[in-house]
Length: 312
View 1 (spheres, rainbow, N blue to C red):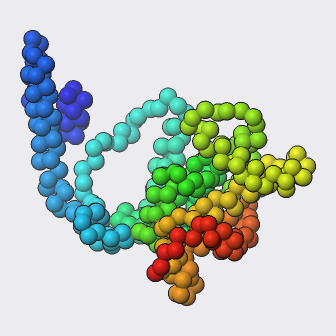
View 2 (view 1 turned 180 degrees about the horizontal axis):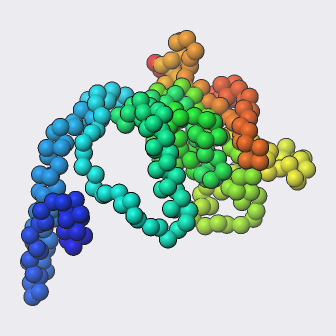
């Protein structure tokens, strides 16, 4: 309750009445008081946002009955009072954190000066044609290494650029990117020197949840063991990284949203989409390499196992 009062004061709203004293009250009485306080709090926030929400309904997707992904956003969300105020004099103990905010301030000023129309467009919607499934490694910032603008790449990153069939995060991103945003190309990007792939080459249990991300890479090694064991030891890691990237492309093609969209667009010019690409990045040179894997042909090899028989 103290947090709620502090929050209300911070945004300039009238505070709620102080909570009733509970000393000496029975458990039933205290439970009733808690419900009263929660109801009062909810009532305040509902009233506080009522006018703003009514004014900006067109700026939100409506996920009610009958909603279909991809409904256009007809207006920007504007004039909504921020919950926090920027303090120009704020100091951060972490040097890098201070650099982060200073860098963002300069970047924002530059973009608003040189590319204001783009920023105003992005304030209301996004229309990326590319999706990037990459590694969380700090050396592989997709927009920076490709010279792309904000809004051009829909991204999800995790340990060793994996598209695990059981991972709700990556599968939700694929579903939204393909069915709502209409991305046309999905890139799975591995990178040389990947720590996740390196960890998979050790006989160490990293414990949950990390081991859940290392184990599947070991399975990739097992699948290609004869080939990998025949390589010089110095070359095995990068070869495993490339094979893992291709394996994740296959996982992307196994997902229902991708198969659904490809069935719908199979006869369209340039179809079927989305197209899936295996690429690998070298942090030592900054170059992104297309592995030139025919992922359609790769999927056809396992079609009897993974085809969900989705018809347009």
